[in-house]
Image 1 (cartoon, rainbow over the protein chains, first blue to last red):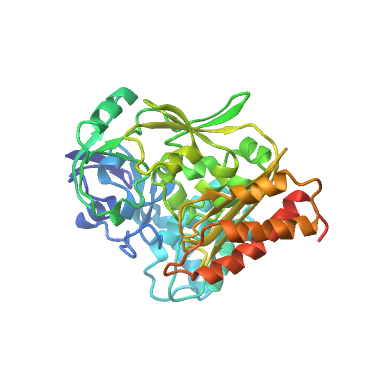
Image 2: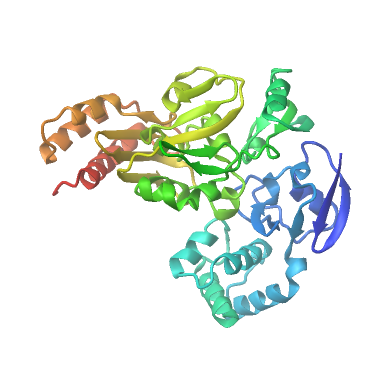
Length: 150
Length: 266
């Protein structure tokens, strides 16, 4: 089947199987910032923005995304750079595998919450796992990024 | 997991006809747990074009379309005001935002997942299911069926009854499936639901009968009710917890929840 996706501002046509998931479609076409972690709806590494909403690419059938707008970190380079700086300043970065998914969740958080409380930040980010850092430094980095963006 | 054909239904009748063409045809809900299934699907039927993703408030009930996502339901403030945030609290405990943006109410109900944190509160809210062919059916009756009907779930109806509520999910980690979940809803009578026993959610009928026929509610009556609950609610073990542990957890939270919703002094 042919589907058409607007990825980071550019319309691209893909030929996909009925049981192909968007994560594989993207990664097989060199969009490899979208990470394959648990591949089972749990870790958040494969988070993308689908029509501006964060979703898990590992569990979205590619055919269901037909004619949708998709943003990955490549499409948000300027914001992602600022998030990276905040992560660096707070020592929140280790292996970096979870960072693309986390960065997109932070962007979505900023869009949906004007001035999120600590609890709202934690609640929003709970689906993005990190197996290196223990979350405290990342939490501080998110707060730093949001405060600097206000 | 294998899907031979994908089909986007144009109408509910179209979806129903296609579903019943072949026993291995299936409806796609949020499809979050699709990868965990091994049964091949001949035709996966997508309902996303049928406008079933709407929550409506009628005078007697809230009508929640089967394709409403858990995030949409989480944001349904008027429903949460009526139910003392029962559904909101249960939804908040289900994975993360990205997951809830995809998971649907219909998929969560039709899947009849034993670990479901949504079915238990729906039970105590006396939810009814509206099927395209079979019409209206109580959630309890649906869960009692050995095999779910080969039908299209149109919506879930929740009666507009205001009450006090308690919800508790117990799990080993925040994102893990429940070891046990408990929902209590009190209006004129009290309803108590227990899920992830590890069996699917069920109403604690004997306990409810005892409480709803008691002349007064005090700590002695609650203690007696909890004992009835522990004797009659079927618990078991799985890889997440032993039966004895579930029983202790249930005892603690049944008492705590009842004291909270019954407005008793401890």
